[in-house]
Length: 219
Image (cartoon, rainbow, N blue to C red; front, top):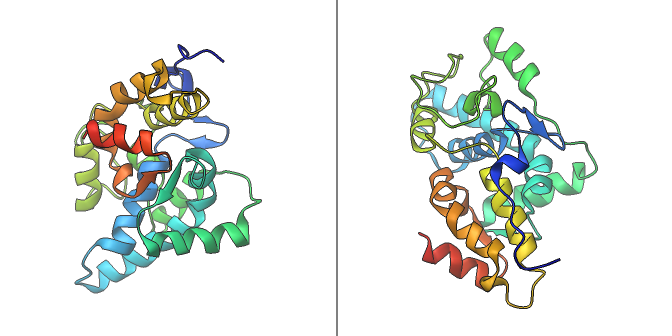
């Protein structure tokens, strides 16, 4: 493997492509929206409590996909102990499960009036390839959720596959004697503005010092 190889978001997931290796577009963003609701958001009303519990259930269900699809434990460690413990619990119980998106059953549950967590369909619905505002995104039962709208606004313009490309370039770079000097590391740096829009690295720390320094330099 030479040090001039790079991976782009388009190589991770093509135009109108819904998933890659079982990982449905928008799922990692949905996971961290669930995490924020379940673990970080002040809960004031009874509805808040119901929503937080629904999000924690979905977060747990999505954990296998998140770990496998994003290199958790290989490329990244959790910054915070509470979500790290949930990860350990779920991977011990369900680590051999297939990756799945949960969109269809979540939509059915929403239609029946249940309080539900978030899936990739809430962040990147239908054939949508780029993050869009709440007003531009296809209507769903969650569109009145203020925290979802906040995440949608923050992630506007980010192409699906961006974090997958960041991870793929991270893997390429670390195979070389001087990872930080590779084209793959340069691509990581190029992708960083959109990666920071996604907000995932508020929850994960890179396991390699050179990669974490690159993330800090691109903040």
